[in-house]
Amino acid sequence: MLTVDGLTAAYGSFTAVADVRLEIADGEVLALLGPSGSGKSTLLRSIAGLDPPAAGTVRWDGADLANVPVHRRGFGLVFQDGQLFPHRDVAGNIAFGLRMHGTPKVEQQSRVRELLELVGLAGYERRKVTGLSGGEAQRVALARALAPRPRLLLLDEPLSGLDAELRELLALDLASVLRRAKITTLLVTHDQEEAFTLADRLAVLDHGRIQQVGDVLDVWRRPVDERVARFLGVTTVLAGEAVDGRVTCALGSARVPWALDGPVSLGLRPHALRVAESGVEGEVLSRVHRRDHVRLTVRPGSGPSTVDAVATMAAGVQPGERVRLALDPDGLAVIGR
Image 1 (spheres, rainbow, N blue to C red):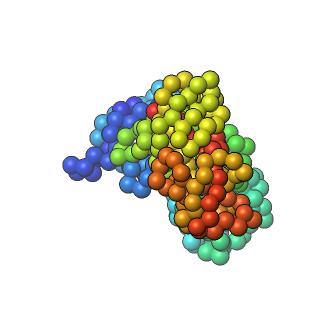
Image 2 (tube, rainbow, N blue to C red):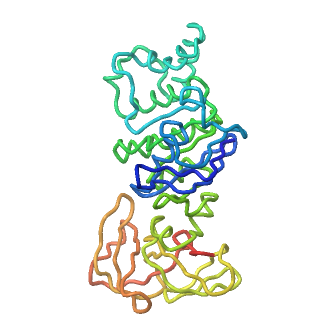
Image 3 (cartoon, rainbow, N blue to C red):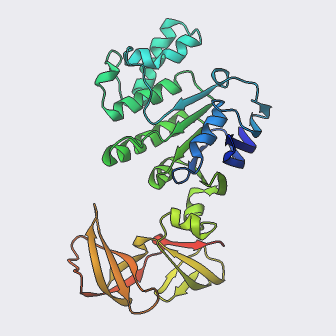
């Protein structure tokens, strides 16, 4: 188990990370999620031992790692650009850590084949890494990090340099690899979908401080405050009332079993309102095509001055038309409770 206790990291007089406390259980994938500049990569580098913290401790199974150098911590690292060795082929890159550990050559070859199978690149041993696609290169970087069987895998924005379609595909593959390898993992990312795809738990970091830690679904449904909610995709916040698992607000009502009875601050993501046969009436102000739906801006007859909503691609809704909107619980968050 990794334990981070009161970790603070600074660059001169600037405190990049302050009093961070985290635990990652064996076999768990924790996503450290936050906007650019929030201190995510700084925290990861401090945990890895690349940058010594100004205060606090990093422990593995209770043992303090303060005096343990990077190469002896037993951690595997994968960065955004992969950082492969261009003069070595795929097998040479993957086997690098094994050679450093003095692993016999026959075992190196067996482990390389095993890992290439795991990351979906069987038969790539003699390929030049300079001829690989971005996705292939990141798979090789992952295999190289996994080769020495690290006790902790550290992933720093591993998919952010890829195009959207490839990033989505590789995230699904990476999730499968991590589950099959059962390796304890800390993932640093600013991408919510990537975090939700890969992680068992989320830690939301902002301005160098942990704002919320919890199960992925719980953090998504119950962000601790409005700033975290908006980072997690909430675009509209309004008052509501919860009674027996149903929330009622100016835009209608919906079953929200995770809401406690009483006044609530309700967060709406763009898909929290959908064009329907019944519901609050409003005027469509604009529409934008997305990959699998249409995003609308609507002026409702009650509540906020404008709201986001979605419609199917076949709906054919145009600006100036009037529509009815119904609440979709999947797009709702209860803030701060």
